[in-house]
Image (cartoon, rainbow, N blue to C red):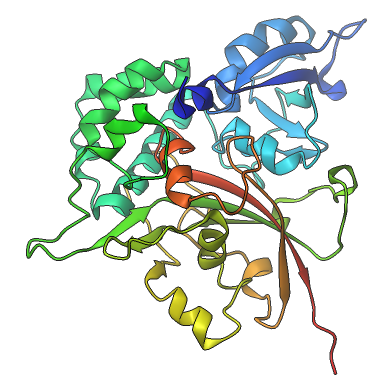
Length: 363
Protein backbone atom coordinates (compact mmCIF):
# COMPACT_ATOMS: atom_id res chain seq x y z
CA UNK A 1 0.00 0.00 0.00
CA UNK A 2 1.53 3.34 -1.07
CA UNK A 3 1.63 6.48 1.05
CA UNK A 4 -1.27 8.13 -0.76
CA UNK A 5 -3.50 5.12 -0.07
CA UNK A 6 -2.59 5.27 3.61
CA UNK A 7 -3.38 9.01 3.66
CA UNK A 8 -6.81 8.43 2.13
CA UNK A 9 -7.60 5.62 4.56
CA UNK A 10 -6.70 7.77 7.58
CA UNK A 11 -9.60 8.37 9.96
CA UNK A 12 -10.24 9.77 13.44
CA UNK A 13 -12.72 8.24 15.91
CA UNK A 14 -15.08 10.96 17.10
CA UNK A 15 -17.43 10.94 20.06
CA UNK A 16 -20.11 13.54 19.34
CA UNK A 17 -22.07 15.07 22.23
CA UNK A 18 -25.14 17.26 21.89
CA UNK A 19 -24.67 20.51 23.81
CA UNK A 20 -26.62 20.43 27.06
CA UNK A 21 -28.42 23.69 26.29
CA UNK A 22 -30.11 22.05 23.29
CA UNK A 23 -31.27 18.87 25.04
CA UNK A 24 -35.05 18.80 25.48
CA UNK A 25 -35.57 15.19 26.56
CA UNK A 26 -34.85 13.05 29.59
CA UNK A 27 -32.69 11.14 29.65
CA UNK A 28 -30.43 13.09 27.28
CA UNK A 29 -29.37 11.28 24.10
CA UNK A 30 -26.14 9.25 24.35
CA UNK A 31 -23.09 10.47 22.44
CA UNK A 32 -22.61 9.23 18.90
CA UNK A 33 -19.45 7.46 17.78
CA UNK A 34 -18.37 8.30 14.23
CA UNK A 35 -15.25 7.47 12.21
CA UNK A 36 -14.32 10.69 10.41
CA UNK A 37 -12.01 10.63 7.36
CA UNK A 38 -8.91 12.77 7.88
CA UNK A 39 -9.22 14.33 4.43
CA UNK A 40 -12.92 15.10 4.99
CA UNK A 41 -14.77 18.00 6.58
CA UNK A 42 -16.99 18.06 9.66
CA UNK A 43 -20.16 19.32 7.87
CA UNK A 44 -20.09 16.19 5.71
CA UNK A 45 -20.85 14.15 8.85
CA UNK A 46 -24.14 15.97 9.52
CA UNK A 47 -26.31 13.37 7.65
CA UNK A 48 -25.03 10.75 10.12
CA UNK A 49 -25.31 12.99 13.17
CA UNK A 50 -28.66 14.75 12.75
CA UNK A 51 -30.90 11.61 12.91
CA UNK A 52 -29.22 10.53 16.16
CA UNK A 53 -30.07 13.78 17.98
CA UNK A 54 -33.18 14.97 16.12
CA UNK A 55 -35.69 13.76 18.72
CA UNK A 56 -33.93 15.74 21.48
CA UNK A 57 -33.65 19.10 19.69
CA UNK A 58 -35.69 22.20 20.51
CA UNK A 59 -37.92 23.64 17.75
CA UNK A 60 -36.23 25.89 15.23
CA UNK A 61 -34.04 25.87 12.14
CA UNK A 62 -30.88 23.78 12.24
CA UNK A 63 -27.57 25.64 11.92
CA UNK A 64 -25.06 22.90 12.62
CA UNK A 65 -21.62 23.69 14.00
CA UNK A 66 -19.03 21.94 16.17
CA UNK A 67 -16.83 22.93 19.06
CA UNK A 68 -13.93 21.46 21.01
CA UNK A 69 -13.43 22.63 24.58
CA UNK A 70 -15.56 25.72 23.88
CA UNK A 71 -13.62 26.58 20.69
CA UNK A 72 -15.85 26.72 17.57
CA UNK A 73 -14.28 24.62 14.82
CA UNK A 74 -13.66 26.11 11.39
CA UNK A 75 -15.57 23.93 8.97
CA UNK A 76 -13.36 24.58 5.91
CA UNK A 77 -10.25 23.12 7.61
CA UNK A 78 -9.98 19.35 7.00
CA UNK A 79 -10.93 17.25 10.02
CA UNK A 80 -7.47 15.69 10.28
CA UNK A 81 -5.81 19.10 10.36
CA UNK A 82 -8.14 20.30 13.12
CA UNK A 83 -7.25 17.23 15.18
CA UNK A 84 -3.49 17.60 14.62
CA UNK A 85 -3.62 21.28 15.51
CA UNK A 86 -5.91 21.28 18.55
CA UNK A 87 -4.90 18.00 20.22
CA UNK A 88 -1.24 18.36 21.14
CA UNK A 89 -1.66 15.09 23.03
CA UNK A 90 -3.86 12.99 20.68
CA UNK A 91 -7.25 12.24 22.21
CA UNK A 92 -9.09 9.10 21.08
CA UNK A 93 -11.94 9.19 20.68
CA UNK A 94 -11.91 12.89 20.00
CA UNK A 95 -14.74 14.40 22.06
CA UNK A 96 -16.58 17.09 20.11
CA UNK A 97 -19.77 18.98 20.90
CA UNK A 98 -22.35 19.52 18.18
CA UNK A 99 -24.75 22.46 18.11
CA UNK A 100 -27.91 22.84 16.04
CA UNK A 101 -28.71 26.35 17.24
CA UNK A 102 -26.88 29.61 17.92
CA UNK A 103 -24.37 29.68 15.04
CA UNK A 104 -21.38 31.88 16.09
CA UNK A 105 -21.31 34.10 13.01
CA UNK A 106 -18.78 36.41 14.67
CA UNK A 107 -16.21 33.57 14.66
CA UNK A 108 -17.19 31.22 11.84
CA UNK A 109 -18.01 32.12 8.25
CA UNK A 110 -21.43 30.84 7.13
CA UNK A 111 -21.86 27.23 6.04
CA UNK A 112 -25.22 26.35 4.53
CA UNK A 113 -24.43 22.69 3.88
CA UNK A 114 -22.40 20.46 1.59
CA UNK A 115 -22.43 22.91 -1.30
CA UNK A 116 -20.47 25.45 0.76
CA UNK A 117 -17.88 22.82 1.61
CA UNK A 118 -17.64 21.76 -2.03
CA UNK A 119 -17.03 25.31 -3.28
CA UNK A 120 -14.50 25.96 -0.54
CA UNK A 121 -12.64 22.85 -1.74
CA UNK A 122 -12.82 23.96 -5.38
CA UNK A 123 -11.52 27.42 -4.42
CA UNK A 124 -8.53 25.82 -2.67
CA UNK A 125 -7.92 23.67 -5.75
CA UNK A 126 -7.88 26.82 -7.89
CA UNK A 127 -5.39 28.42 -5.53
CA UNK A 128 -3.12 25.37 -5.74
CA UNK A 129 -3.36 25.30 -9.55
CA UNK A 130 -2.48 28.99 -9.68
CA UNK A 131 0.56 28.42 -7.45
CA UNK A 132 1.79 25.41 -9.46
CA UNK A 133 1.10 26.58 -13.01
CA UNK A 134 0.67 30.34 -12.73
CA UNK A 135 -2.97 30.01 -13.74
CA UNK A 136 -6.01 27.94 -12.83
CA UNK A 137 -7.34 27.32 -16.35
CA UNK A 138 -7.34 23.54 -15.98
CA UNK A 139 -9.63 23.78 -12.96
CA UNK A 140 -11.80 26.51 -14.46
CA UNK A 141 -12.24 24.48 -17.64
CA UNK A 142 -13.28 21.26 -15.92
CA UNK A 143 -16.55 19.87 -17.23
CA UNK A 144 -19.46 19.83 -14.82
CA UNK A 145 -19.49 15.98 -14.68
CA UNK A 146 -15.74 15.91 -13.93
CA UNK A 147 -16.14 18.54 -11.23
CA UNK A 148 -18.95 16.59 -9.62
CA UNK A 149 -17.00 13.33 -9.87
CA UNK A 150 -13.92 14.95 -8.31
CA UNK A 151 -15.94 16.20 -5.34
CA UNK A 152 -17.79 12.89 -5.03
CA UNK A 153 -14.49 11.00 -4.93
CA UNK A 154 -13.23 13.23 -2.10
CA UNK A 155 -16.42 13.14 -0.06
CA UNK A 156 -16.66 9.34 -0.46
CA UNK A 157 -12.94 8.68 0.05
CA UNK A 158 -12.65 6.96 -3.35
CA UNK A 159 -8.97 7.25 -4.27
CA UNK A 160 -9.17 5.44 -7.60
CA UNK A 161 -11.97 7.69 -8.85
CA UNK A 162 -10.02 10.71 -7.61
CA UNK A 163 -6.86 9.64 -9.46
CA UNK A 164 -8.81 9.22 -12.68
CA UNK A 165 -10.39 12.64 -12.73
CA UNK A 166 -7.56 14.61 -11.06
CA UNK A 167 -5.03 13.36 -13.64
CA UNK A 168 -6.83 15.56 -16.20
CA UNK A 169 -5.78 18.65 -14.24
CA UNK A 170 -2.07 17.99 -14.92
CA UNK A 171 -1.02 19.37 -11.56
CA UNK A 172 2.15 17.35 -11.22
CA UNK A 173 4.42 18.16 -8.31
CA UNK A 174 8.16 17.74 -7.94
CA UNK A 175 10.62 15.06 -9.06
CA UNK A 176 11.46 12.96 -6.04
CA UNK A 177 14.44 10.67 -6.48
CA UNK A 178 14.36 9.87 -2.76
CA UNK A 179 10.87 8.40 -2.77
CA UNK A 180 10.34 4.65 -2.68
CA UNK A 181 6.74 5.22 -3.72
CA UNK A 182 6.59 3.67 -7.17
CA UNK A 183 2.88 4.33 -7.49
CA UNK A 184 3.29 8.11 -7.48
CA UNK A 185 4.43 8.03 -11.11
CA UNK A 186 1.27 9.89 -12.11
CA UNK A 187 2.71 12.89 -10.28
CA UNK A 188 6.22 12.49 -11.62
CA UNK A 189 5.51 11.82 -15.29
CA UNK A 190 3.18 14.73 -16.02
CA UNK A 191 4.78 17.53 -18.01
CA UNK A 192 4.28 20.81 -16.19
CA UNK A 193 4.17 24.22 -17.77
CA UNK A 194 5.77 25.59 -14.59
CA UNK A 195 9.08 23.80 -15.18
CA UNK A 196 10.33 25.67 -18.25
CA UNK A 197 9.40 28.87 -19.93
CA UNK A 198 8.99 29.43 -23.66
CA UNK A 199 12.72 30.06 -24.05
CA UNK A 200 13.54 26.72 -22.49
CA UNK A 201 15.06 28.32 -19.42
CA UNK A 202 14.80 26.59 -16.08
CA UNK A 203 12.06 27.98 -13.85
CA UNK A 204 10.89 27.32 -10.34
CA UNK A 205 8.79 24.49 -9.01
CA UNK A 206 6.08 25.81 -6.73
CA UNK A 207 4.67 23.64 -3.95
CA UNK A 208 1.40 24.87 -2.36
CA UNK A 209 1.76 24.90 1.42
CA UNK A 210 -0.85 25.87 4.02
CA UNK A 211 0.69 26.57 7.42
CA UNK A 212 -1.03 26.61 10.80
CA UNK A 213 1.52 28.18 13.13
CA UNK A 214 1.02 28.05 16.87
CA UNK A 215 3.59 30.13 18.74
CA UNK A 216 4.11 29.73 22.47
CA UNK A 217 6.46 31.31 25.00
CA UNK A 218 6.48 28.68 27.72
CA UNK A 219 8.33 25.42 27.20
CA UNK A 220 7.02 21.91 27.81
CA UNK A 221 8.60 18.47 27.85
CA UNK A 222 5.52 16.27 27.41
CA UNK A 223 2.71 16.90 24.95
CA UNK A 224 0.16 16.48 27.73
CA UNK A 225 1.64 19.58 29.35
CA UNK A 226 1.24 21.73 26.23
CA UNK A 227 -1.03 24.77 26.70
CA UNK A 228 -4.55 24.56 25.31
CA UNK A 229 -5.51 26.48 22.17
CA UNK A 230 -8.61 28.33 23.34
CA UNK A 231 -8.78 31.01 20.64
CA UNK A 232 -8.12 31.15 16.89
CA UNK A 233 -6.16 34.34 17.56
CA UNK A 234 -3.34 32.08 18.75
CA UNK A 235 -3.01 30.49 15.29
CA UNK A 236 -1.40 32.14 12.27
CA UNK A 237 -3.05 30.72 9.15
CA UNK A 238 -0.77 31.18 6.13
CA UNK A 239 -0.68 30.26 2.45
CA UNK A 240 2.91 30.30 1.25
CA UNK A 241 4.29 28.44 -1.74
CA UNK A 242 7.69 26.83 -1.37
CA UNK A 243 9.74 27.53 -4.47
CA UNK A 244 12.79 25.66 -5.73
CA UNK A 245 14.87 26.33 -8.82
CA UNK A 246 14.97 23.11 -10.83
CA UNK A 247 18.64 23.67 -11.65
CA UNK A 248 19.55 23.58 -7.97
CA UNK A 249 19.54 19.77 -7.62
CA UNK A 250 19.57 20.26 -3.88
CA UNK A 251 17.64 18.09 -1.46
CA UNK A 252 15.73 20.46 0.81
CA UNK A 253 14.67 18.96 4.11
CA UNK A 254 11.38 19.55 5.89
CA UNK A 255 13.22 21.63 8.48
CA UNK A 256 14.79 23.86 5.81
CA UNK A 257 11.43 24.29 4.09
CA UNK A 258 9.66 25.36 7.28
CA UNK A 259 12.40 27.80 8.24
CA UNK A 260 12.36 29.28 4.75
CA UNK A 261 8.57 29.60 4.79
CA UNK A 262 8.65 31.36 8.17
CA UNK A 263 11.33 34.05 7.91
CA UNK A 264 9.59 36.02 10.70
CA UNK A 265 10.63 33.33 13.16
CA UNK A 266 13.71 31.80 11.54
CA UNK A 267 15.68 34.67 10.06
CA UNK A 268 19.23 33.89 8.87
CA UNK A 269 21.84 34.55 11.54
CA UNK A 270 24.66 35.27 9.12
CA UNK A 271 25.28 36.04 5.43
CA UNK A 272 26.36 32.44 4.79
CA UNK A 273 22.95 31.14 5.75
CA UNK A 274 21.30 33.81 3.61
CA UNK A 275 23.36 32.72 0.59
CA UNK A 276 22.52 29.07 1.25
CA UNK A 277 18.80 29.83 0.96
CA UNK A 278 19.03 32.36 -1.85
CA UNK A 279 17.70 29.90 -4.41
CA UNK A 280 14.53 29.21 -2.47
CA UNK A 281 11.89 31.92 -2.60
CA UNK A 282 8.90 32.36 -0.35
CA UNK A 283 5.96 34.47 -1.51
CA UNK A 284 4.09 36.13 1.32
CA UNK A 285 0.94 36.52 -0.70
CA UNK A 286 -0.31 34.12 -3.37
CA UNK A 287 -3.92 33.71 -4.33
CA UNK A 288 -5.72 32.48 -7.37
CA UNK A 289 -7.90 35.04 -9.16
CA UNK A 290 -10.99 35.64 -7.06
CA UNK A 291 -14.18 33.96 -8.22
CA UNK A 292 -17.74 34.66 -7.19
CA UNK A 293 -18.59 31.25 -5.80
CA UNK A 294 -20.92 32.32 -3.03
CA UNK A 295 -18.41 31.26 -0.37
CA UNK A 296 -16.45 33.88 1.52
CA UNK A 297 -13.01 32.59 2.40
CA UNK A 298 -11.23 33.72 5.54
CA UNK A 299 -7.60 34.78 5.67
CA UNK A 300 -6.60 32.55 2.73
CA UNK A 301 -4.35 35.08 1.02
CA UNK A 302 -1.12 34.30 2.80
CA UNK A 303 -1.50 37.10 5.35
CA UNK A 304 0.31 36.48 8.61
CA UNK A 305 -1.69 37.36 11.69
CA UNK A 306 -0.40 40.05 14.01
CA UNK A 307 0.87 37.49 16.48
CA UNK A 308 3.40 36.26 13.91
CA UNK A 309 4.20 39.53 12.14
CA UNK A 310 5.13 41.26 15.36
CA UNK A 311 7.79 38.75 16.38
CA UNK A 312 11.19 40.39 16.57
CA UNK A 313 13.93 38.95 14.38
CA UNK A 314 16.00 38.80 17.56
CA UNK A 315 13.73 36.12 18.93
CA UNK A 316 15.01 32.63 19.49
CA UNK A 317 12.62 30.16 17.84
CA UNK A 318 12.51 26.41 18.40
CA UNK A 319 10.28 23.97 16.53
CA UNK A 320 8.47 21.91 19.17
CA UNK A 321 6.66 19.66 16.71
CA UNK A 322 5.48 19.46 13.13
CA UNK A 323 2.42 17.43 12.13
CA UNK A 324 1.36 16.51 8.61
CA UNK A 325 -1.42 13.98 7.97
CA UNK A 326 -1.35 12.84 11.59
CA UNK A 327 2.35 12.02 11.71
CA UNK A 328 5.31 13.89 13.16
CA UNK A 329 7.92 13.30 10.44
CA UNK A 330 11.63 13.64 11.06
CA UNK A 331 12.70 17.16 10.23
CA UNK A 332 15.52 15.87 8.02
CA UNK A 333 13.11 14.06 5.66
CA UNK A 334 13.30 15.36 2.05
CA UNK A 335 10.56 17.92 1.50
CA UNK A 336 10.06 16.53 -2.00
CA UNK A 337 8.85 13.26 -0.43
CA UNK A 338 6.43 15.18 1.78
CA UNK A 339 5.11 17.07 -1.26
CA UNK A 340 4.52 13.94 -3.32
CA UNK A 341 3.05 11.75 -0.60
CA UNK A 342 1.33 13.82 2.10
CA UNK A 343 -0.64 16.38 0.13
CA UNK A 344 -4.40 16.74 0.52
CA UNK A 345 -6.80 16.22 -2.42
CA UNK A 346 -6.81 19.96 -3.25
CA UNK A 347 -3.01 19.74 -3.78
CA UNK A 348 -2.07 21.70 -0.66
CA UNK A 349 0.27 20.37 2.00
CA UNK A 350 -1.31 21.27 5.36
CA UNK A 351 1.44 21.70 7.96
CA UNK A 352 0.73 22.21 11.68
CA UNK A 353 3.74 23.78 13.40
CA UNK A 354 4.22 24.50 17.08
CA UNK A 355 7.05 26.96 17.67
CA UNK A 356 8.42 28.11 20.99
CA UNK A 357 9.62 31.70 20.83
CA UNK A 358 11.81 32.94 23.68
CA UNK A 359 12.98 36.55 23.88
CA UNK A 360 16.69 37.07 24.17
CA UNK A 361 17.68 38.51 27.52
CA UNK A 362 18.35 42.20 27.22
CA UNK A 363 21.86 43.15 28.10
